[in-house]
Length: 492
Image (cartoon, rainbow, N blue to C red):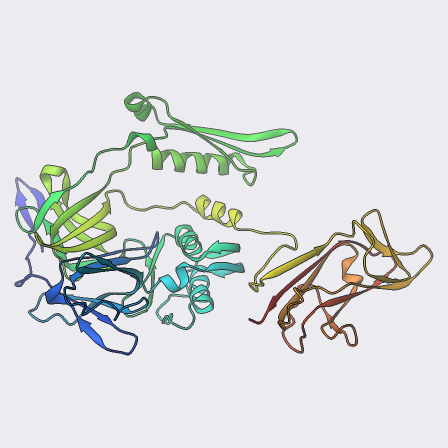
C-alpha cells in the first residue's frame, strides 16, 4: 500500500506493505502414468521449483525417503509434477507444472528431477519463414505448429502492432521465442495451466506478494557490479558505399573516467546511413556504460508469483528502494531449514531500440534455395559436376545441365533419390538454381518413372508417393541448370 505525507510543502510517498494474514503453504503431487496421484508433501526431505520468463524454462527437483522401496519403480519418467501454493491451510492453486525426466536412487532415498511443460517445445528446432507478420501472430503460429496441440494459445495478443520479417533454419525453439520477444520488448512463458502467456515486459504486476526488510526478507544477495560487461566506447562500422564504410563511435566520458576505456566494435553491413550507425552505437553504449546490477533477494516462501511479474521489494540498506522490480526468475525451496523464495531481479528496466529489432530481423533473414520451412529430414544436391541421369537433347557441360546445341527443347531424367530401405516417401520438395529457371517444367515420379506429377519450385508434394524419387526436367532454349535440390521425408 502507498500513501503520501506532506513535509514542508513537499509530498513524500510512504510505502507500507500489508503482509498476508497467513504464511504460504505448499503442496506437491506427482501423477503416475496410470493416473494415480501421489501427494508427497508430508514426506519431502527437500525440494525446489524454479521458473523464469522468456530466456529459459522452469525446472524442479525433490527427494523423499524410500526405506521400504515403496517408490522404487512407480516413477520412470514423464510423470506429471504439480506444485500448489496458497496463503491458506489447504493450498489449491496450481503454481507450477512439469514432467519428471530423471528418477534416481540415492542410499535409501529417491530423487526426481524434471522440467516444466515447456520441455515439449524446448527440444525442437524451428524451420519457418515469416514476412511482415505481427509478432503475436508469429508467437501463436510457433506454439500451434510445434506444440503438439498441448498448449492453449487463445490468450496470445495477435495485434501487437509491430510486424517482423524473420526466417529460421533449424534454430532451437526457445531461441526463436527469445528473438521475437526481444524485438518487441515482450515476455513469454507457459503457465501451469498450459496457457501461453505473451505480454509487454514490465506490465504484469503482482499486488499480493512482496519482499520487505524487517518483515519477510532474509537477505539480499550479490548485487555487486561486474565490470567485465562495461563498454563505454562503442564503434559501429557499417556497409561499404562507393568504397567508404559508414562509421560512428559513441563514448561516455564519465564511464571511461570511472572504469577506463572499454571498447566494443560492431560490424554490420546492413547499416548504410550515419543516422543508423549513430543510433545503434548510442543505444549499445547507454546499455553497457555502467556495470549491470542483477542480483538475488531471498525471503520467506511466497505463494503467488509467476514468471515475468514485477513485485514490490524494499531494502534501503542495500539500496533497493521501495518499488516494483521485474522478476527475471524465481526459485522456491524447501529443506530442513524452512521454506524460502529467492527472486532474481534486474534493477534496470528492460528497453529495446527499433534498431535492435532491425538487427534481429537481419540476423534471421534467409535467401537462396536452402530453406527448410517444411521440416524435411533429407536433402540431396545434384551439382552436375559429372554427367548423370539420362538425356534427350540435353547434356552436362562444365557443371551445367542445358540443351544440346541447335535444340529448342529437351528432357533430363535423374537417377533414383532416397535411402532405398523400404520406407515410403511422405513429403517431397524440389528446387533449382540456374538461368531462366521459371521456364523449366519439373516432374516428380515415385513409381520408378512410369508416371510424373508436375510441380512448381518449392511446392510441397505429399500424396501418391512411393519408395524412391525420380526427377524429370524439361528444358527450353536459354535454360541453364547449375544444381538440383531434392528435399524429402520418409515414413518411419
